[in-house]
Length: 361
Image 1 (tube, rainbow, N blue to C red):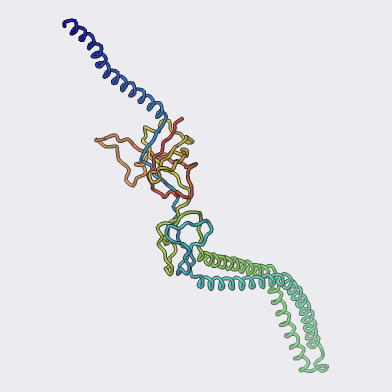
Image 2 (image 1 turned 180 degrees about the vertical axis):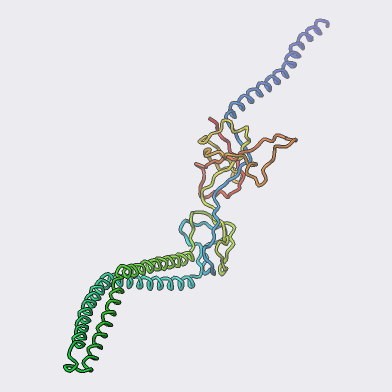
């Protein structure tokens, strides 16, 4: 009986030893798994920087009219897609058509006056020298007539009173005075005719004045035509209409905000901690996850890093030059351009949450 108990005790000892070794093996396996998992995680995440402080961003163009008037045609709706050059709306053009027609008529009148002045200048260049020559000849003729009349008067005065009459003497004196007056009149006209350069310069100045008026009239006509063209508004770029604030029949004022046009070019603005920027450079590959579309796999690259933290460009920047200072880790916006993964079925509205992961080189 004693032998049997001893044999049973020897048999239980190995089983007990094996049962006590199982927890050690399990514990060792767990430790090994943790070490391997930690090593894999470290190796797989080494050289990666990510943040959840990131959002989709893009260009939102504010559309405003340049002229006032009532909306007579509206070709857009809320959140509608438009292409560059598509008609957005039309403003009542009738007032601007009348203004353009008046400006065109004023331009034609100014051009006609300018053409007339140019013709007058050409005539003046010929007329005034001819008038000078004519006035000079008239003076010569008047001098000759005065010399003859004066000689006749002198002869009448020297003739024996019995050989002439008082009537003949008075007639000779009157002819002498008339010839002298004619000479003085011719000499006065000659002085006026001698202003050839001044008269031609005056005609040229008139041409220059009317040229300026014609230029001004053309500018007015161009502005009127431009204002008329502003009544037909088109989309400047491809995009989506957002925050529409205009309806058919609305009266618009120049500069009034009608809506925003979000362009199709969308990127991600990621606010990385300053400690994450040590090895971050433009051109590095980025994987992007969008919270709204978990199955959308986007890839891009770092485009640029803003030269200043977000707090530096706030309305009231922090004033750290004080007695009490607490260091706060700053964040710097990084622009990430999306290269692949976008499609027409998944448009990205601005402001969606994103999780970019940058592969550092």
